Amino acid sequence: MAAQVTWLLPGLRAVLSSTDGERWRRWLGRAERLDDSAFGARQALADALGVAPEQLPWARACAAQELDPEAAHEVLAIADPLQTRVEMFDLRVLGVGAGQLSADQAAGLLEAINGYLADEGLQLIASAERWYLCGEAERWPDAGCLPSDSLLGSSLAAYLPDSLPWQRLLNELQVYFKQHQLLQQLKQRGSGSVDSLWFWGGASAAPRSVACSWMEVEEADFRALGEHLGLHDGERVAGDGVVEGASANAEGIGTALRRGRLRLHFASGERFALQPRDRWRFWVKPASADSLQS
Image (cartoon, rainbow, N blue to C red):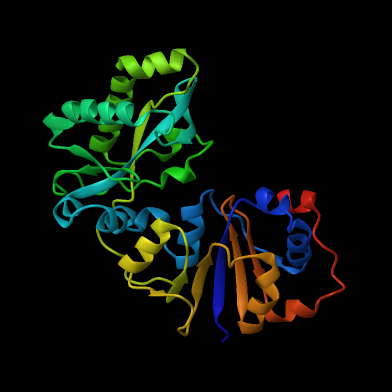
């Protein structure tokens, strides 16, 4: 059977509105529409690997690249700041990250949270890219949560961890943030503010198997995960693979189909499949933007 390559792409709407939008519509008109998946770039990669995203060891993979070995060994999860909006008795996720805070403000917030977490035996550690939660894995088994980018626009209640200790920690931190003077000042100014943390990526063991044998990716998190899973870097090996970045473009689809089957995984959840024979289906009309967004 011919090899299959999966391209990880931005949101479908962004691709269709790009300068290559017409070329994309031409190929998507020939493609088979697969079942849509959940939102998020990491979900798109997890689909390609054939593994649920909450079962991938994102935290350990990234920490191994960003922290010293001793600190990396203590990592329980990635700790992403969230911006949310209150809706009745729920929170809707509007943004991820602490980008609205200055470096000094973020450092001060981190120090304050660590003072609060000390009694739990937990500590936040900052790398250049993100925050990590460190502690004893025996006391804090994997929370089993989806990556934060899969939550954007969603109700937080639908994705809370099953573990009661993790639920309690999240609830208590939300209360703490509501009482934090700087964060409340920022919110009152309309600047937006961090009002929650999300712990994810803490799968303690790599999956037994994945559906691909190689990756050609530019995103640092994807590269870290591929290395952690032992996947070959680049497409100079046999078997199915994953491509992300500049080389996954509409102009290269014809060449890719000469090598085998191609799947297109958009971060917005849409999935499509192309076969080598689709190169010759010139009579098929380009897909309309309306039909692709339906």
